[in-house]
Image (tube, rainbow, N blue to C red; front, side, top):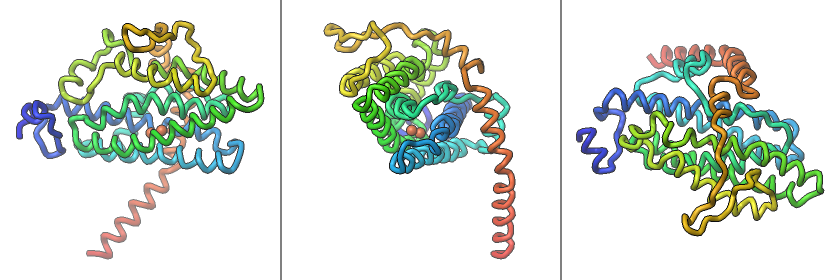
Length: 304
Ligand SMILES: [Fe+2]
Ligand SMILES: [Fe+2]
C-alpha cells in the first residue's frame, strides 16, 4: 500500500514499505535521540547504586537502571530497521551531532533525587511515550509498548521512595521536598518548547509520529501529577498551580525556556561530565566488541 494511504487509514508503516526520505530522516533523528536518552539516563541514577539506603532499594535501582539499558537496545534496533547502523549513531552522539534529553544533564545530589527522577522524570516520559505506542512507524510503536510497561514500574518506585521519605523524619521529608523543588521545572521542560516555537511538531503530527502537541502533553502531566503530590504531602514549587473549573485542568506558571535552551546548547550543570563518562565507557568497552566480533567470525568459520 502507498505511504499516504497507509497514513490515511491509520495503518503502520513497516521497514520494507516505501516512505518519503524526510519521514525516514525524522524517525532516525527521533529514535536515535530517544535511544541516546535511555542510555545517558542510566548515569544520574547509576550514581546512587552503591549508596542506596538498603539492599532492597539497591536491587530495585539496579533493575531500573538495567531496564533503561534495555530500552536503549530496543530503540537502537528499531532505528536500524531504517537502514542506519548503531555504531554510527553512537559516533554521532559522541561527536555532539545528535542529542539526548536535557533532563539528564541535572545532577543527583541526594538519595531523594532517585525518587524524584522516578516519579517526575519517568512520569513525564510515560506521558510523552504512551501516544508513541500508536506511532505510524511499526517497529518504533512496538518498542514503545514494552518500554511503557517498564516505565510505569519506574514511576511507581520513584513515588514509593518519596512517599517513604515524606512520611519519615523531618530531615527526610525536607530532602524529598528539596528534590521535588529541583526536578519539577526541568520535568515540565521535557515536553519541549511551547507549540508556537516547536520546529518539527506540525510535520510530525501530519505523519502520525506525534499525536498530541507539546503543550497538551505538558498539561496532561500537570493534571496527573498535582493530585499525586497531595498524596505525598509535598508541595510543587509553583504558586500559580490551581484547579481551573472552566478549563477542567490545573493552571500552572510559565516555564522558563531560556534555561532549557541553555542546557540544550551544552551549558547544563552536567553536560560535559555525562558525555565524558559515555565516551570513556565506550572506549573501555572496545575489547568486548572486538572479542564478540572475533568469536562470531570463528563460529561462522566453524559452521562453513
Ligand atoms: Fe526508559
Ligand atoms: Fe525509566
